[in-house]
Image (cartoon, rainbow, N blue to C red):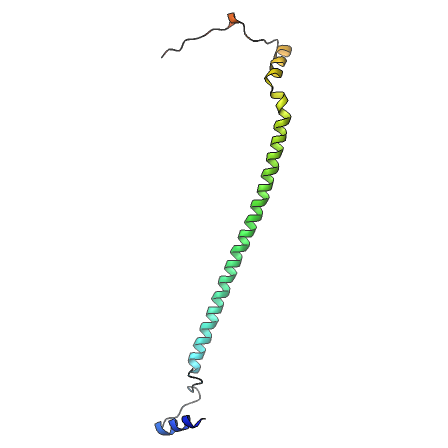
Length: 121
């Protein structure tokens, strides 16, 4: 013990037990309290870190799914455009009229066959 502590003990007449003895102004109880607080703070920080990382992993997984679906959409649109180009000759009005005349003996109506109706309000 230092001389200041010895003088304090002698002057006050009290004895300081080893349990309550201070080291740099911190008792063992307060040191334990600070250790527990530090442990809880570290644990909470770790939990928040894990939750944030899980969120980022979930976002990354959703981005991969979205990119896959966008790629599939592009390929299906390309396939649709190709099919529309293949069907274009078959949708021609001249071709349909020619097939109707040849296969079904159809023709455009003559003036005598057309009747107009008046609209009554």
